[in-house]
Length: 276
Length: 303
Image (cartoon, rainbow over all chains, first blue to last red; front, side, top):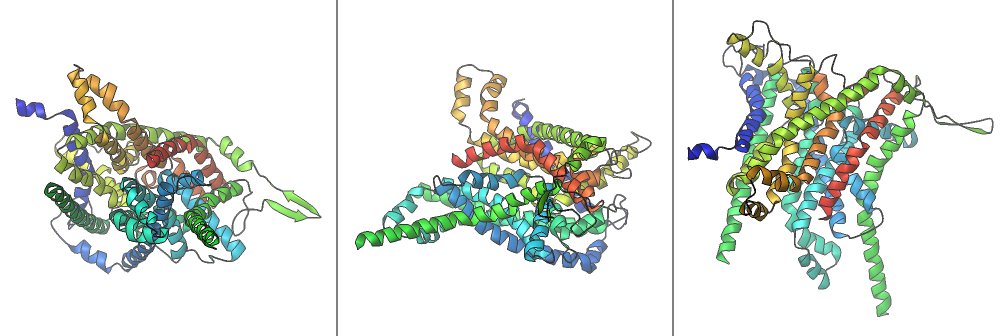
């Protein structure tokens, strides 16, 4: 009876919610090992779709394009987002602060079709006036992804900056350390975990984007979501299931690793606090 | 001598400060704000068979500067009931999906915040993990589940509950469930952040004073988590209004949504001015929710 009472409504909803989130992904994984081409009819275990996936030149080259764009976009977004977060949390009042804070938070909720269309129109106009970019492709996707990813980085880093004790930085500056040196030798090491989290978030966001990339891309550059989308539009295909399984596996392993390290740090911190 | 050196130093500091502020301000002005001005501009120009496919706003001829402000695109949106139906369909679908996300997400976040401390990080990662995989593939998963020869129909026919498959794919139902599925983590995250920060002594005080559980929830917990409710709802509602992938893959001819209409105007009809006008009206429609979200976010950033 007492064990029954402990099972309350919200816990049941949490379990149902997690099942809702994970069952469809589980189905994708299971059917990637299906021998039949019909995705929904089970015809025995097979790994043939993985073989076909790795022989698909178009998908492989799209993966490489996407990884390169995501790497450079995430790196630039971390620079831009960190500076924006630093300015927002440490600089007090300055002219343009309201404008900056609006432009930092707006991309978080802006519908992708609007962002994509507006950036394309910008690139077209720039090409008319300055001659650059003559061809749209990786460079224009990189700029577009950097811009919207930096908003996410800024939110993550600003949250960390607000937690950090400001007085250490002030003490360093009072003792004559110039601002740039203070930032690199004091602030940056403290917020490194947030930078890593922001970089990873930006990386996955860039890898995942279909709509904005479709607007600002040219004929030369096809990202992975663009290739997957044109295939999925035709209906379900077991090759895409195999790709989905690999993506889910990679993200799960990375998350597991992150969890392991975060928990270890937490235990260490608690142990250190106990020793004091 | 000393004075002038320190003033030179101060000047350098000020210059450095300005440069640091300028870097994100200039980038975002150039690649976020300016593009919106261009959307407005092109929404007021006339479609033309040219590259790029729109006419100029300014023309100088015979010593006169002609300014063309073509309101035709906006009037066209009003005259064709397709566009109004698409806006209405988007807002309605996004609203229903947001309410569903809130009803599922709030108890989830509540249970997470009440869970033992060592479980909380794991639960948070479990809720967020799907959003780090691939949006496109998570929507695709529902195609295999909902289609006529899909998992649910096979299951129901297999156990003899129905004879012919239920039509679930390409319906309003499929689009709504797709949005709820894709956006649920973004609802849970801010709710959890608010509920976990809440001071438990308030709840204990309410209980000590004899308040019933449900009463405490309505009078204490719910108002204190209002910020999370607003943030989560806006994170779902605003992008859902402009959603393209979900209605394209799961919707049918009767599920009109504005993001899809805009995409088709742009990519299929190549009518850039009408697509721009559609984007401007969508932005106008979302202005209040976006400002609301921004107010909340800047309060968070400041606190």
